[in-house]
Amino acid sequence: MQRWRGLEDIPEDWGRSVVTIGSYDGVHRGHQLIIRHAVERARELGVPSVLVTFDPHPSEVVRPGSHPPLLAPHHRRAELCAELGVDAVLVLPFTTEFSRLSPADFVVKVLVDKLHAKAVVEGPNFRFGHKAAGNVEFLAEQGKTYDFEVEVVDLYLTGEAGGGEPFSSTLTRRLIAEGDVEGAREILGRPHRVEGVVVRGAQRGRDLGYPTANVETLPHTAIPADGVYAGWLQVEGEAMPAAISVGTNPQFDGTERTVEAYAIDRVGLDLYGLHVAVDFLAFVRGQARFDSLDGLLAQMAEDVKRCRELIAAAGDPV
Image 1 (cartoon, one colour):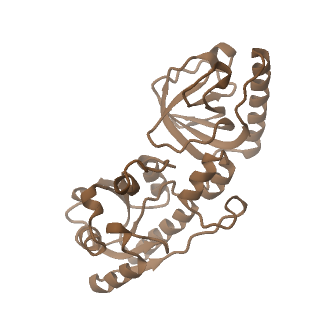
Image 2 (spheres, one colour):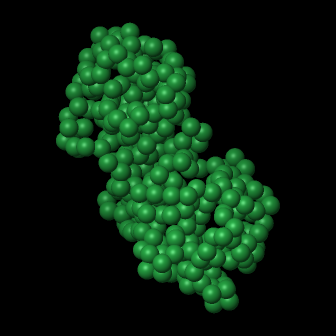
Image 3 (cartoon, rainbow, N blue to C red):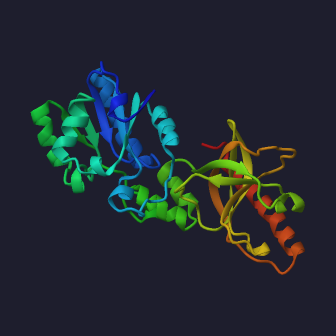
């Protein structure tokens, strides 16, 4: 799969293509439906498929300080799109100047002049251009002028987790913030992932017999609510069953919120400086302060036992 950053990265000889545009944060099951449709349409037409997204999130430019928590960094989104069969991902730097492009100018500069769109596939709520003035109806009118089709794909509706709401990144962020990682997994189609580099912490876990990887998360990461979770620690392609702690460590009067993962039954791991990922399978319990260190150790042993059971029941990670 090709990856481009900015319009200038698109090859000069790029031919016609099927395009889909959006933030696509998380590449959840609703996104997957749209992307798969774009890929299938591209194959029918005998042209490549291109996914166009933005960096930073448009809201941060339009309303500084409002950057939403991210469900997946751009490199992870690209990986997920490649798995769905996308031929190229274009990340457009979203600047103040770019935000002022009218919908008509966006169509010409991006879809017509650079990507030579033969078809554009979007969800029904797609908006674009200055002040989000463009919609799928306007896009369809532009298609008649510039010779591209517009196809609209309806989003899935969620089950219990969302109470019948359409699958969305906003809903997924809310569930994660509430600690409902199982509800988020229903929407994403896989466990929510947090990534970062392993850094040195207070090393209390090592002293207590449960050495943890202290993950310095990427900026704007959507981090689950404080608590203990079952999941996996992903290291260089290996998924290790893990008990995961999120929070400030109230037992030791901590103030800094951290994400720490204990690789269950693994000894002698040296992960410092490695980029790792933590996949959240299920919520186990909320954070708590115990009357004694013995009480904490007893609970930690119970947490690891429960995490081991949940992971075994889930089978192989997605």
